[in-house]
Length: 253
Image (cartoon, rainbow, N blue to C red; front, side):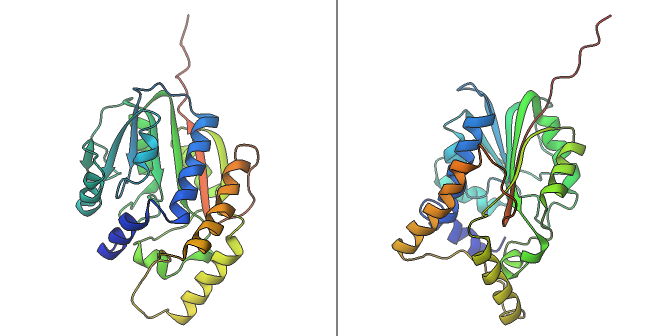
């Protein structure tokens, strides 16, 4: 990710409708599908500037990992010290360590050359009976300058992400698109930027909005958080997966 994008993320993560809406969705998913004790260990893979760790620490002891020293410096500013710099392709943790592994918009990144290998690493460090929570970018039609600014090389469908999560060994509990109600707006913006600014300097769709628009978009996005525990959404700019690492079957005589 470009340095400018890290700076924008750190400045906007606590007030921008996109991040606030995603945090609300994550809280709902954890409350619905995940059972944790207060001192269970949580690993946020690709933690970036640490914004989502503020949510995860409400459910257990949150650890953050990122390949970028810049992102980790911003996470330190948030007061987190359980941080590790490493690649998602080789997690520096023992097998069966974490009760929950999370990954928010990480697998699409160019640094993740083998996303299935990354998912197998998530499986390895997740304890039996533990959980995986992933969100990532959806639908190749939305590829745009936003992806270039974030160094993204792939987007998923619900089927393609679910297939890889299952191949890594997890049992899927929830698989849905998100950012569904705003999908027409997002599609229009991405297509417009793709053709109007195709040769310009890459820039993301992340920018500060007037409070009234920010609140309105958060209300729309937040509505999905109330629906997702009960329904799968058929289309959206992001895809979400909750999965569990089952206990190995016993080999009794």
